[in-house]
Amino acid sequence: MSTAAPLSIAAFAIDTPDPRALAEFYGRLLGWEIDEAEAEPDWVELADPAGGPPLAFQFDPHFVPPTWPDRTRPQMMHVDVRVATLEEGHERAVRAGARLLPQPPDRQGVQWRVYADPDGHPFCVCAQQ
Image (tube, rainbow, N blue to C red; front, side, top):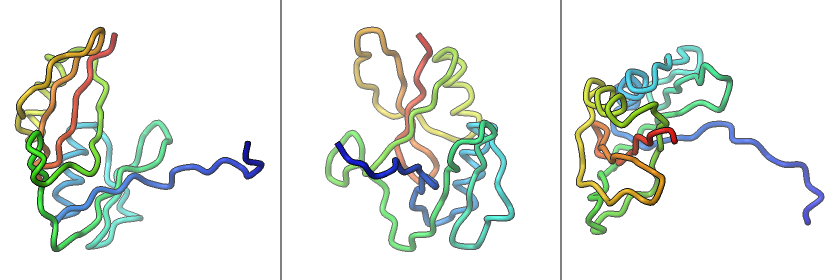
């Protein structure tokens, strides 16, 4: 066992050709606000109102969206968003600007739906059990 102190996550960053636009999308989805004190043209953060690490959006001029579920260009990460019901999650995702992707089968006791954000990053809304 390591004797080093545990580390903490400073931010979770997502590559994008337009940091502000993608931050605004996730802000609508999550109900979080942009931290203007941390905003730059190439980096925008959403502040977690619960005090957790921010969700950040980093400029990548060469960003190419994943082709999930096809593995030609695999996803490198995805965000899971907890919702009370799949219906609520669907409404919020679509209203924010997401598009529904092909759905995998639900696992025993877990229900989720897969969407793509405006840049094509897959994310899931997961119903509380």
